[in-house]
Image (cartoon, rainbow, N blue to C red):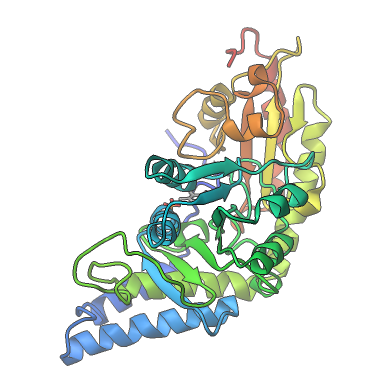
Amino acid sequence: MVSKPLLYLDACAATPPDPQVLEQMQQQQNRFWGNPSSVHPAGIAAAELLERSRQRLLELLGWPQGQVVFTSGGTEADNLALLGVARSMEPARLLISPLEHPAVSAAAAQLQQEGWTLELLPLNERGQIDLDALEGLLEPPTQLVSIAWASSELGTLQPMDAIAARCAAAGIPLHSDAVQVIGQLPLAGLQPIGPDLISLSAHKFQGPRGIGALVMQRPLHLKPQLLGGGQESGLRSGTESPWLAAALVQALERREAQQPQLARRLRRQRDQLLEDLLKRGGIRLSGSSDLDQRLPHHISLLLSDSAGEPVSGRAIVRALAAHGVAISSGSACSSGRDRPSASLLATGVPSHEASSGIRISLGPWIEDNQLADLPDLLESQLRIPNAPAP
Ligand SMILES: Cc1ncc(COP(=O)(O)O)c(C=O)c1O
């Protein structure tokens, strides 16, 4: 049997690695296999590749005075940011958004166990942080703020410059989980003020799995969370992988070289697809309706059947998968579970509709004509009698 090629529309969960990045990685793995801590030529060559990658990442981000800690991915970078900053001080108050990935919200919950007060910042009607409320909370005992730059589930971009300006004026460190933003938007537009620390992950921008980074605009005092040989300036023990670090940087360079055309192209495809989808019954947009305030490749929808009853997002994801279309019913980590989406609830979606969300996320591998049949397919799935309820 010849199976149809998969139409892969789940870029926010994972992206297919760029073949050129994989090829370079393979070559570098063969050449730079030495331990970067060793002082013989094999080690020195590996250490040089690692340091070049570190410097290049800072250059790409426009943070020449910064510091990079390579990690295993976004989750570890988020954990290091929250636990590392918080555990270097006495317990105080931590502010996060209600749209965080579990890598942030679970670390914040852990800090609560350790005596920190955790406060969820309110959102305005566009699903963005209420800046007045933030400003009102930027006083003692607040000592740390962490706000995802973009929600993976809803695609809403936060007004990071305004948030960063307020945190900087109050002298309170700001971390942002930028895992869904880095590689999707031109880097040049991101830095004017910027958070003090950001997390990023290579597998979201066609780099390899297993490498990410916590990047600081300026070195900050962090308590290491992995103890051992003191690699990464003592902030993350464990033998480093220079070829993975170099592959992260190459993948980001390749994305950046395609910008701003790439973001424009994805946005055009996204806008056309969304327009076609919203003409169908039972399909509504969730998250911000101001498309400029969303990730350019991201669509999040709420689904209902012909009787207007919410339909399970997970069931629709499975049904589309059977037709060779890969989407998601929310953030990948929670899509294995059928429970109301905390992000939808936080943006005011009633609980009986909060399991009816799906996410479609595009990537450079998509051609315009591949999207043409999707609205019909999705609509037909919603019309199937007895479509499973959430
Ligand atoms: C916003 C956000 N933060 C963190 C992560 C975790 O990153 P990783 O899969 O590299 O651990 C993800 C992954 O989906 C994410 O979307």
